[in-house]
Image 1 (spheres, helix red, strand yellow):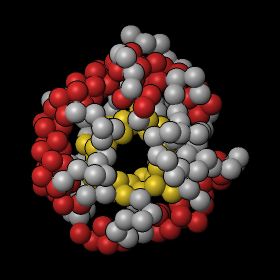
Image 2 (image 1 turned 90 degrees about the vertical axis):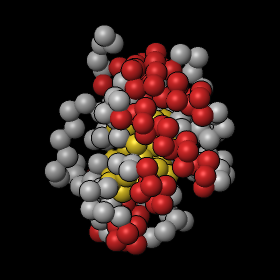
Image 3 (image 1 turned 90 degrees about the horizontal axis):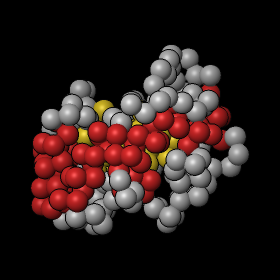
Length: 214
């Protein structure tokens, strides 16, 4: 077990789907927060800077009412412009060390990793948390490769950072992560595509933490 991590209640970290219209996105996210989501990442890969900014601004205004942190995927400028809590980057984005230099120290920086080496490098370069995956097969990210057996545990053991598992997580398999020393899980379709996002979020939280839904 990595030193310095004491996980009490594991978080449900919602990552948004770019194809969702903004009004629907706001309502889904609002419901998800009511169901137990405690972190939200706005992920836009094809939007213009203006559209990304407008969506981020509206989402942050809504999340602020619930005291839920907003993270921006990749776009440091958008994160700064809307006063987001932090950014999440990938291995092909700006180097983590550069991102840490550009952003104020108050902002959180997370990075996606899939190997022990990447995890250790992330810790050395100042990441505040890491996203690790894909832990299960996923249709959300076409190029995502499922981690070989044991790699998630090896990554957890190798660093002292909060670890968020991601990739193909849904209510029927999330319980397999319950005993892992993760800070939480990141989900997209399990909530974004749900008929009732509030119930989907609550069920994920319940199955991950073995708690009763109130």
